[in-house]
Image 1 (spheres, one colour):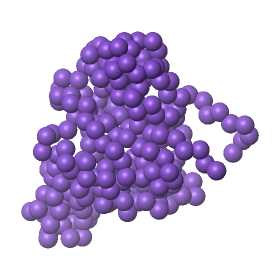
Image 2 (image 1 turned 180 degrees about the horizontal axis):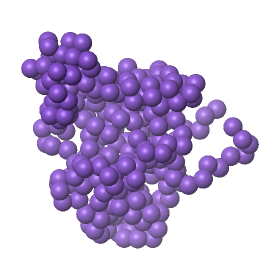
Image 3 (image 1 turned 30 degrees about the vertical axis):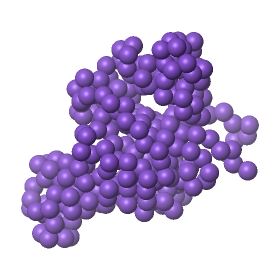
Image 4 (image 1 turned 45 degrees about the vertical axis):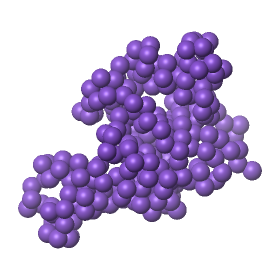
Length: 249
């Protein structure tokens, strides 16, 4: 019987809940628990992220950081240390430090220093009283999502439709994606990507939904079938540290 474990996702942005949502949804279906804590989210988008989490079976909370102001200071570390000690996850998922270093989204680099420092401190005798009085908690498995160099894959074919449903709840993100992609891709090229582009081009949410449908399928297909893994759709991860095996897989 598969051991039931709890997962904590430390997400900088709300869309990360969906980016590894297949893995989280599959984990919940198998009887585990999953909690997503989001550092940065616009107030008007919070309920959208909550709804996406409900589609996937997750509990979602918000860390309350401000865009452009994330710091790896003691106060910020205390907030995340308290969360880790209270939730007491077996597994933490967060962004890949290598990916975040070159990502031009604000706060990702500083956020990764903050998360990893907090994960380390959560397992030590640090600020017990200030962090809610919870006992230290050592997290033994850390996985980086959407990594530059994955070393493991999760088969998400059976829950891929849930990823699409969850993404559809993030209308703020969909409109943002449509705006960014429209600024990158010439109008003349968009019909090659979206057959119905002319019908949806003036609705940013519909356009964003169609763009994510193509991009998300391509991403999971690339890491699934096209990686020769034997999976159709897969989400990639990089596990921190060594895999500990009794026997070779």
